[in-house]
Image (cartoon, rainbow, N blue to C red):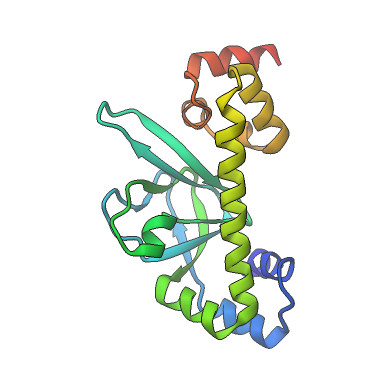
Length: 189
């Protein structure tokens, strides 16, 4: 159950077996259903999720009821409502599993305890933040000048499994295009 998490950690920091077991002891297994909401809008996020199997989506819903997907975490990745997790203010987004998922969950208290108690875990946290920032920046700045076809090509190049795992509606909301446009482009590729 912890092999993917151990691999994630050992790829980012020099951790001995004792430290690894200690870190893993704070992560609790969680089984979810498809489309299960983990964090609701305006709820204060108290947990960080590592995806062992399945997928987490982070999204918002505007006043017209239109969903916009902001981030997807697949196997071997972390996901949460990070601004709320950090500053303990209400989340302005939802966190949801889009598939039946197996997660490893750590509480905010335990997460920050590990960051302070094990310097190498602090490096892992920094790596998570940096990767999230870089991914968001690439998506924002890359998408600004892209037309729909370029956006789809970008996602295929940078996240090849994405379009195979995510519904057209969710993928279109992430790319900022309509589902019909996405379908039309996919049929031509």
